[in-house]
Length: 594
Image (cartoon, rainbow, N blue to C red; front, side, top):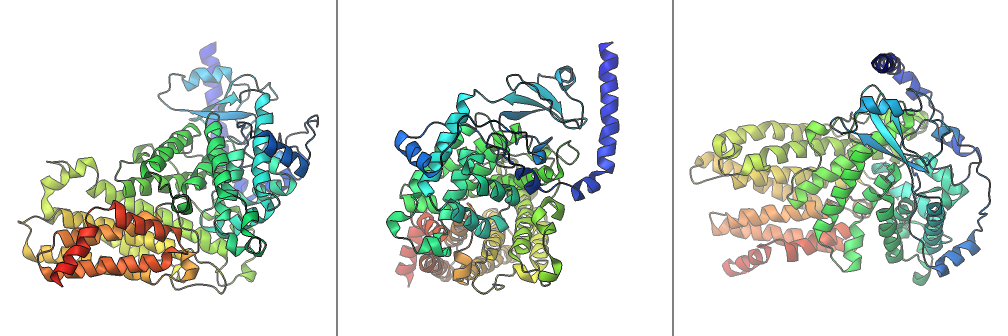
């Protein structure tokens, strides 16, 4: 009887799965706007959208009292009904957190079906949140939905949110608007309408770590808001206090992860200004280890799995997909700049490419109001998509020329030799060339708008860094047995790429340097210096050594004159001067032969 029941359930789910796929496009076009659900008057305990809330530790009584004076809170407020927009969502619930059950998990999905309180495509039942239950998203995918810890944790969450808001009061709304104006367009990992709508109602509708992260990142652009720029220095919110709150609360949030926890982690990883202004110069491996935690947490959330056919709202599908690719880029660039293996393996990556329907703001635009497609929303989305494409090429470069299988003694590169390795590089060179040639005019470096920041520079620096990575590998594998003509071609091409990358940095205007730059930018700039040092160390003549040394000085100057306005440039300069071995000797050698 049990076998018959399980078989019948699976057959029903296959049928519903087929219906879901057939109606996927209609579902995406008819999804209710998140704002409609938020405006139903729900309380902080039920509104959370893509910023699902989690408890954290209690802040000091002084800060809590200060925030109570700012915005009184009624502890006995009755809990209203759940907002309709959050119906059937996953990973967004305030009182529960969902855990993905992988195919080899000892908790077999077939057996977990016996504990499911609801069938596919039905709303989560009104059961007590004190028990764990299984939820099947499609025929292949099952999650366990766990209750969060205790009712006391809600008071802890509110206390942390009040402390965060007290730190920025009365500038919370200003910082949110600043974040969505400058950072969000090219790094769209939040659902803008849901976030802003909730924030207009109360700061208590969020996970503490996410709210602190948004405020913290926005503070880096305080000069680009008239209200913030006109305030006395002592009245500007303290970034150190916000950072402490963000790091403390995200550690708590990771114990019961939600999509908001992943969003907060990705935002905190992007802060170039943090290391530069703190003076601590945190070891890069601390960011690497934090990334590993974020990746592990994201896998618990099922971010690495295709969610196209899951029984969740279409807007959450788009949000998950954007988060997935942002995480993928963080992993690939982190592996590149730190010389480490990938944390996310391609064989375990099953996420479809991002498309326009995944970004609701594109659908809200009036085509007639922006005929030349230069809106920050369109340009930012294009930048995000092109970054993903470029990162996929980088992934292939690293796998082909930098993986342990390729570089070990007797490995793939040793076995094939230099000539074959160059042939292996040609498709990658063509892909990079084609990628660059296909950039639309609005993404060209020189395409800036009057009195607007331009994030295009970050994309072009990333492209230069991928080229540098490829040609560093080719220079390294040359041997005395390399044919002379091929040897010269490889070195001359590497020199040309080096010169081009330095000229790129030298051409960055204030509109570029003041825009949003991701966490890898400083290392991407420093890798340009690494190629210069490598060419200098392996040069065949004093003339070539002098040329390389001059390029290092040119690079230093390009970073120095931009360091005051661009934290990534200042950090890159520090990496060149202190952390990258050999560049100090490059200058000495230049002086000795000139």
